[in-house]
Length: 389
Ligand SMILES: [Zn+2]
Image (cartoon, rainbow, N blue to C red; front, side, top):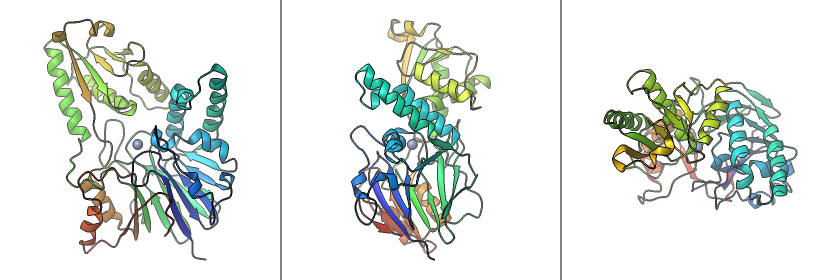
């Protein structure tokens, strides 16, 4: 029997935030990711109607690509609503989710009183313990199809999700990266794998002239400027855009100090980052070095070179130096194009796309249509639309 596949974006279609995609393979109901953003949540009403579901209890499987909040923020709700569904993630993603919700979850979920907090903590604990941890490249046999996680780069634990039926091969990329960073390799797919359909997180798919701040170049420049400042007798405070990016920067700094390309001075790190790094040490993702110490309270960031980071704020400006650090952990427009040409699937479903700031919404499709080697058809998935693929 030919496999019937239907796809609906519940959130994170032509926007970033609340990534959650419904995939129906014959009678099997699957969710890919379950994200949330401050003012965005997946719209389950799109599938709680004919021809789909009467209740979320009919969801069979949920696969989580990685631990960023816009891909996993709705987990606690879904774990209690999808009572018949199994939730899968890689072991590192499971650990990072636990960290994300334990440290910030009860507040995120709106608990105000200690009783509400207690209740939310039980829900969080239940949700996390229900995640089945599966490593990369280990096929998960499920009735009707097989699922395999592959390394996606982006952040530690991130996975591409490959779904295989007897006659279909579908890849959900999740967020991925095409170049290695200090903490992760680029995505790794086994040689010879082919896909009919790629559901692709394409943050820069509508940004042909966007030149992403390439992580390796950015961090090299950053190390140079830290070196200069330390040599001139300054301390350096680094303000990072995201916890996982702070983790990445810590690894880069520690590598540089180990190789003596940066003087070895104390590096103080904020409480969240320290807790994350300590958790990961237990899972053999080793980042911490003897010169890393707990920083002051919860102020996010890294302090380099001063014995007491609290003093940083009281020093005259000339002795301290603050730098905002940001870089992209996503493929550039060109890398997305190259990825599609490499696998040349019949269908590309684009999701998680950034705003069309350049007035170039369909340029990736237009460019590839002009390419004789490309056979792909494009779907720019709109929320609630049903696509039979
Ligand atoms: Zn992400």
